[in-house]
Image (cartoon, rainbow over all chains, first blue to last red):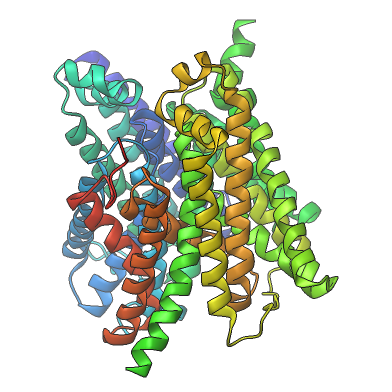
Length: 311
Length: 281
């Protein structure tokens, strides 16, 4: 291992230790808030790769989070698979659904993916509600526990450390991808598909791979989420979260990892500040912020930060 | 047989609603290329307009309907002014106004839920319950005939067509692009609002009613093709019949009918991505 690689690895480990250590100083309420914040960051990072870097408008990202969560719970407790097999099967389910949506949608230019994924997200909720004993219907599935891993029960702040590892692994994968040939192909396809095709990039395949990969990342985040509340039910995975993710990425600054993180932190924490003022109508504020961001600062808060730093 | 006839009338009425939503998309896509996902929320605003003017203030139906349509024209015009025109003038990519309109979608939905609460509200039928489906079909046929005549027979309609074929050339011929864009958004909002007003007695005005309508309408648009006005109505009828036949004859829970548009959308994107009707040369 070269010196720079060793330094990078040390950096990742240090980040993991610091972010996990925080969990041990928080009470159980703030641990819960912290876990969900971390999960939103993981989702915003992968959605940023899909929307910001590869330029695909999709509303299915949060549905894949739900598909991952439900899949792992169903495989574990309805079908009785062991944990590693259940995770693998969950990943296969996410991959199959992502391919089934992405391949037809790339046949046409424009925003057909947006509609197909909107319909998928809507259908997912219907399937959850009507799924009977398999999905638990409107009540969902409750009262299960993460099976022991190598004989150890992971709980409390230790589970928060698992989520920290998930966020950092997601970030590491996306960061490497972004700097690879594939990341440049994605940006080329986003900015000018004709030119990308002329340079020998397979536009349709690049889009399908980016969509499937980020959707599977969302699914894995969902599998981790399944053991945060030890409950999965339809309202958790409602469509408004798909919009929230889009808003996070745009308000933070799309196409930038830091932007996704800033957007996720801001929009996740904002309701805690706003709810004493306007109750649960904080989405109205998000909508206004979103329109304002596109009209006034298309590069988001990160773009604003860059601008202030330069002047 | 009687059962099938009843099903046909009910499917035709739903199909007309979907067709009207598809028409709203089409009016905006043709001249601008912008897919406005907020049409579903516009329909919702139209439904709440119906509740406000017909149930709460109890205006006579024609007056209430005209008020709602006038208000929707204003909503469409204002939306274009706020979320579309500044971006088009700046030369932003096409995605920018589409995203801004998504933001507006949430603003519409949350404003309505803030103003009217989360409970559904009753909207009256003008000719009673048993004739409401006939009224929907008649009203939508009149709208489609009027729009078709507008595009085929009037100079202004031809100007719209010219813009959708080639924006630059149309501008050089002296057509005012921003006026055409504003008019297409006003018209789209009126069509969507009418769809909401017509469907409201069946489903009640509810702040979450927009998204399903937006999906069904868009599926109708993809099936019919964006090239021709009639395509929107044809697509709407096909989606509605597929949905109702599935609910009636397939051994599935009724909720799965919402999966029919998704399935049709996928099949059509794979098999016939340009839609059933070709644009006329």
